Length: 389
Ligand SMILES: C[S@@+](CC[C@H](N)C(=O)[O-])C[C@H]1O[C@@H](n2cnc3c(N)ncnc32)[C@H](O)[C@@H]1O
Image (cartoon, rainbow, N blue to C red; front, side, top):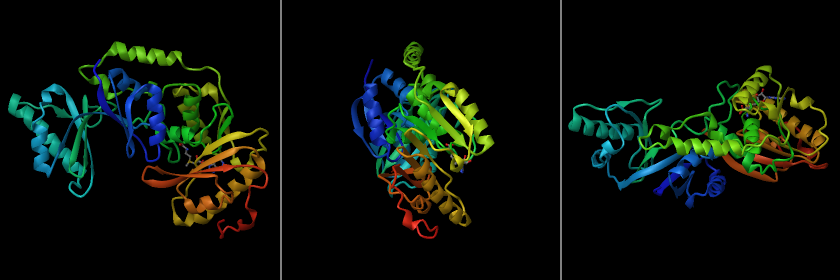
């Protein structure tokens, strides 16, 4: 099987996690980039990467790289490629473009120019053209232009790996599955200590925690674009899926999903059933601030509400202050990790974070803060709600 270069795209701050995941898969020539990791491997590596990587968003297979000066230049360079190697008039395609730098600023226009170049080539050669399908195309192309360097890739994934396929319903701004999996990994959970998400919403964090702890492949709930490629090796892919299923575990740690909202409980239940982890997690309707003292150390990971409007600021400061007090008094000996885009409210937790990691939830800049809870960890004197610590 031939070897080729690939690029796994990821979220800001997850590059090191992805490097580790790729090493475990046996990928070669691994190079950390900005929000991406380059690697090489064969067809099996590409299938494995899509099926097993928890912190990647997409797996791209570059097919050409060239310098471009303007859109017309891009059109010419794309026409030089023989597109019959990848497409025909019976197939559909779509193009995603991203641009960085001052030279190309309109990614939609870049995608349009590239599409024209491909369609015109087919028209000139055959009198017909392949159609566009942005939802489920047979071939998805990715164009990445950084300054004047254009990289053209086949997108082997399709829609983002952040959409695993088990979450059909959701409440309260759920995290993407890739972000949730990355949080669990960054929190360095030992996969033994009780895991608690006390404000679990649609259950994304605890479901990803269960998939990790029970070694369930994140790709098992969906299909990928490489399955439509002419060179798709069905037998190889079936073998990869079978091997993965054989490695799943049936016993593991306790994972708790709490939320005060009934609808959130119901949706977490449905999502967990679809993800095949319902038996491994306990769902409870509970206001976290009323929870009883937890008598053994727990590993707590959650994202509380951020508060979207200015008027909610005071409430958020108060909520985060209460969270800090409750964690300190009822979860002695535990570690708590909080993801929040509300930096001011986060200060009202009133505990000194032992780690603070910059991440993004979509466009929102966040901090993922670790609090080690032990008696005396609260910096009590600044708990006035107008005075963050
Ligand atoms: C930002 S959402 C969490 C989203 C979740 N991580 C996901 O991916 O779906 C915050 C959740 O906190 C819950 N919540 C707010 N205050 C709570 C409290 N005092 N106790 C328990 N849950 C609470 C809300 O009902 C909401 O579901």
